[in-house]
Image (cartoon, one colour):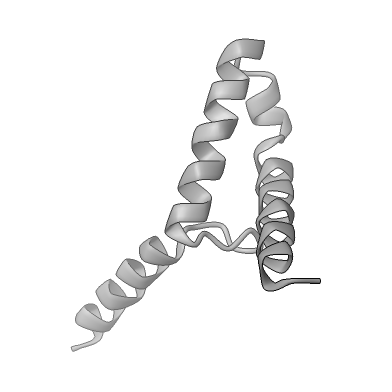
Length: 75
């Protein structure tokens, strides 16, 4: 397997995980079919670009900001 194939496989795995994260009852019951597809694409694009961890409830950047805020409160 070439490195390009590994990258492609990794991206497909991330997209699959993010898609699974997005397809919750709250989203499937809220959007129309067309809007759902558009929102899902936007969510996946956001998640990949921001480095969102599918096991976490918030993007890394949000977690980092929250941690920085907590540290500033301690001082």
